[in-house]
Image (tube, rainbow over all chains, first blue to last red; front, side, top):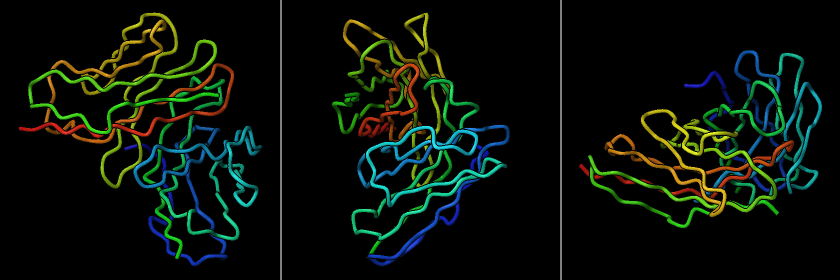
Length: 115
Length: 113
């Protein structure tokens, strides 16, 4: 098991609502990335945070936003939920951002269902 | 644009036989390449990665992968499959100096006793 934890494990929301997902990084890791994994697909990169700043973003709309805190824990916020937002949301921490070479340690994910 | 292809949705192999899970990629330059495994209701677990150097990379649980630059491939292999290897396997690539990791769609490995 990695030292990455996520909460909650499951969540049900309705269209238009807002949701906050939380991630606690592995000890000593200053970089966290968030991914969306739809059913039957691979994880899709949402964004990455390094030392409390957004370090890069994938092809997701601005209603997907994040925060990283001084203890390097992180939040993913999604506003105006849509049905297609239903997915497993994974966070992954790494020791440093190091230009893509770092191993990522994944949490177990939060499964979000939007009705 | 970066992309990763895992051409097989599922690979079936008998326990004790060698296994191969295929991966090809399209990334400019010399990418970093990764394999992760996902068990039911769990996050992804790191198996191995290629950064530079020897084209044959050894990883966790007896897995290895061979980097082939001319064929832009990074196939995952294991000499002798175990039933416990049954899981979903993801190949991933990131561009040197970048921040984004691109994952393939995954290949489900089924090892029959």
